[in-house]
Length: 383
Image (cartoon, rainbow, N blue to C red):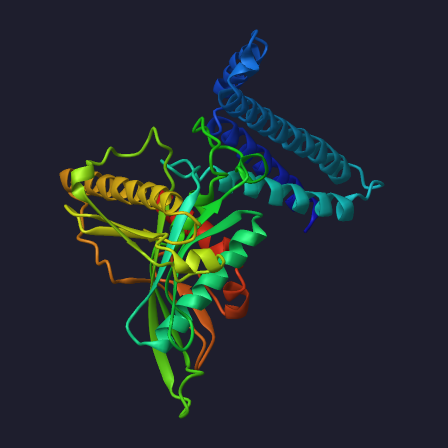
C-alpha cells in the first residue's frame, strides 16, 4: 500500500469510528455509567447479592466498552499523524510499520462494528439448541451427529458452557435428536456496542440464531457398500433461553406431563428410575423432554423452562408475521426449506442459501469455524 493510500485509509477509519460512536450511543451510556457508579456506592448495595452482581457486571461492561472505543480512536489519530508526516517528509520512512499497525487496528474496529449487529431482542441471551435428523435412517442420523459436534466445537471455541438436556441415539450410528443449552460468559464474550441493558447470556443467541433451519448434506455415504452419493437433511432449532420474568405464564391445565426411564448418560440411578420428563403443551402440540438431570423434578423444571421459551418464540414470530402483513411484506415461510448446503462430493462447497456466502473449506466449517457464516447472516438481516 502506497503511503498516500494508507493516509486515505486511516482517514476513512477515523470516520468509521465517529459513526460507531453514534451507533454505540456512547454519550447516553456515559450517563448510565455515572448512575450505576453512584448506585454501587450506596449503603447496603451488596445486601441483594444477585441484583448487585448484575449492576456490577453491567458497569464493568460499559466501562470496558468506553475504554475500547477511546483507545482505538486515540490509536487511529496517532497513526494518521505519523502517516501524514511520512507522506510530507521524504526523509521519514515509516510505511511498513504503519501498515502493520493499520491492519491490527482495522481488524479491531471491524470486530467492534460487527458486534453492533447484535442489537435485536434476545440477542444477549443464552440459547437452547435442538437438532433433529431427517428421513433417511442411519445416514441422516450420522449427519445430525456431525452437526452436533460442529456446534459443540464452535461453542467450545467461544468458551461457552454446554449442558446436554436430551439425546436420542440412532440404532446403528448417529443421533435421532439432541437438545443442549449454551451459556456464555457475559464478562468475557459479551460483544461491545450493544446497549440492551442486560448481560445474561454473553450474546450466545445472537451468534447461534443464524443456524436455525434445515441443513442439507451431499456426500458419498460411509454406510453404503456401493459408495453411492447420498443427500441428507437435519433440522436445527435455536431458541433464546428466557428468564422467569420474561416467560409466558402457562396454564397447568394445558400441559400433559409424562415420565419415563432415562436412556441417557448420568449413572446407574438415572437409567433405572423414571427421572426423564416429557411435557406436551396441548393447545399447540409443542413437546419438550429432558432426561439429563438426576431427579425427575430437575428434569421437569428444565423442560418447562424450554417449553416457555419455545412458546414465547412462537408468539413473537406470529406477531412479526402480522406486522409484515400490515406492511405488505409478508411471505409464507417454508418450514422445511433449507438454509445451508454442505457438499462434500463431487466437489467441496458450503453455501448459505440466504446470504450467498460460501466457502470451499468444508473441513474447517465442520470443525466449528462458523464466524464468517454468522457475520454474513447478521449483515444480511440488517439490510
